[in-house]
Image 1 (cartoon, helix red, strand yellow):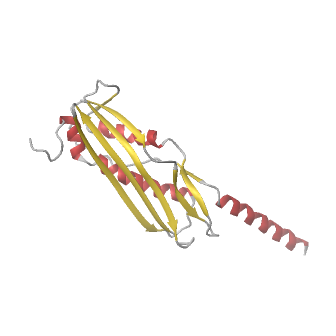
Image 2 (image 1 turned 45 degrees about the vertical axis):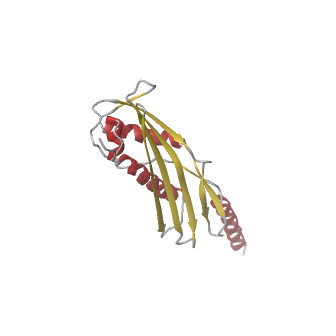
Image 3 (image 1 turned 120 degrees about the vertical axis):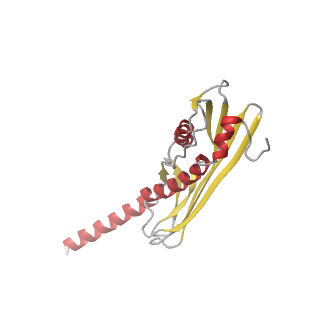
Length: 201
């Protein structure tokens, strides 16, 4: 009888700890891994790179646990710095050199405008909606070219949404949106020539 009481007490304590842990906020480390596209148009010209996080807050959205309560997901690192690493890699891959200051041949500002997450439905098979959006503003001389890139994903997950799983889902969406910008050949050709894509020459 005493063993049963001790075991029951242990289960109650374990359940309480699990419930408390499950409702803690999740800090998501943004670490995009976009596919790199090399158009090799830069001819070693210099590009000044600036990445700005334009989001209103670090809040990504909310997740549910077994009790259908919600806990917030927030970005847990310097998102602009993480994205800047990939943007500079893309600049170099396209045969430009990364430079600073006003002496660069061209400037590229990348704005992070949205990273959001929403989980709904049953805990054991939740529906997850994620969205990421960027805006690129390229300048060469007195000419500017700007373009927005966004992607929205919605999936039904077969497993509970652990912190690691949420981080993977969010980074996949961020990587896809950033990859759209990297795959924009018009952006790189503008940085190289100053000719706006689609403009008559």
